[in-house]
Image 1 (cartoon, rainbow, N blue to C red):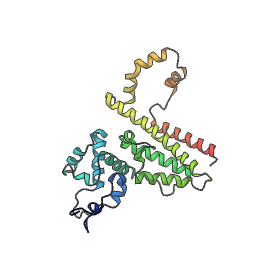
Image 2 (image 1 turned 45 degrees about the vertical axis):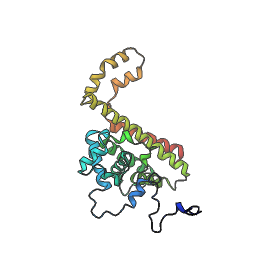
Image 3 (image 1 turned 90 degrees about the horizontal axis):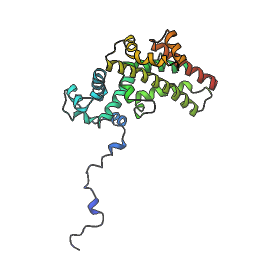
Image 4 (image 1 turned 120 degrees about the horizontal axis):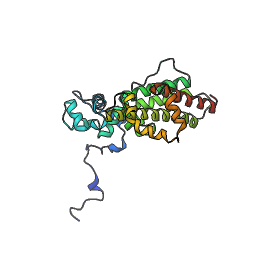
Length: 260
């Protein structure tokens, strides 16, 4: 019949037409950034986006980081950042990767225990400097999948390689230490958040504020060991000692359990 197209003809593209673009959801942020589109006069970069977002979060908290606020901070059009990121989730990933670039260890750190310990202490320093990390990131979260965090994991796993452990045990060791670090530092950050929210500026102010509840609870006689802690402890205000003591206990347990 006149005018009837052959089957499939309507689906064909003209010669030289552009191929279908890949589905953005199927391509990771890091793959996109490894092959950015040419931009000879680009005034914006992923590094600048990350640095601006970190500045905002450090000063005002993670909720202050919005795409509109970023555009204002960077002095660009509201849609400019979308050339590199698809939204706030990508920005959080860039922020996480940027601050974990500081997770460096001494060159002579090779023994598995020294690597794990140094990595844990350095991680604590980074999170306390950027406490919003404790709100958005954990060892099991998708935010662990950034180049710099993967580099830290690779360094730790390679320190365990060759000790007679299979890869499952190696990952269990890494996960156990990371879980301790995340839990301990998140609790420390939560304490700081509470102090700031309540306007408390020192541990003594915290104790004064909580004294009525604590006096009542101790007066019941139900908590004799805790009562002893309150009266005998000498390191209540030494979170660094508490963190390192817990960390060494975890490492001692791993060494005893696995014979390494």
